[in-house]
Amino acid sequence: MRLFLISLWLFTCSLVGFSQKLEVGTSSKYSNGAYHTTSVYMVDAPVSRLDAVLHEIYMGIQNQPTKNLKWLWKNLGHHDNVENDIAFSERGFSFDPATSKYVLKLGVAMKKGDNPMLFNVEGDMKEFYSGGRKNLLLTVTKRIKILDNARFSIVSVPQPGGKSAIQVKSDLDFGWFFSMFFSESRYRSIMEWRIQGLTMNIKKRAEGDTSSNY
Image (cartoon, rainbow, N blue to C red; front, side):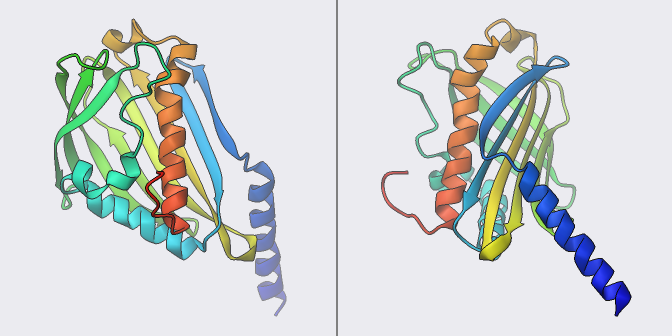
């Protein structure tokens, strides 16, 4: 009985400690040659529902992600209020579940209307539970002209009262080609708002919002 009470106390403390450290919102910083962004929002839905949305993303990415996950990318293609915003487009995606390896053919246009340059982004994509939290993790394993290293994670976090929280973290170490174009302020206007928008789209999906406004 004593062991059970101690375990329950430790578990409760861990939840309380995490909720105290959980800062809602989106913020970025530049350190050690990379941009680090964290986006956190509370979700008015149980963690089981948020877990299901993360699994939907994992399965949808594996086959025609642009078509199957329109809700995830909604309003993220181009920022009309940002001068010289970079336009991204997915031109092909393949995934091997046996090895967790993916290859993304990424189109990048330095401004809207330009013909995109095509790059093959190679990495790992994994879905797993850690510490009672569902994780979706994508990493880049092959250096290319626009990207040296990258790590992108989506985590569902249980919250008191049957609620949950969505936490998205991005670590991007751009290659020499992109480094010429990105200052910290430009990173925030081009990349940070997309990460925040993606986080909000996941939140809305978990809350059952299927309106045309997102």
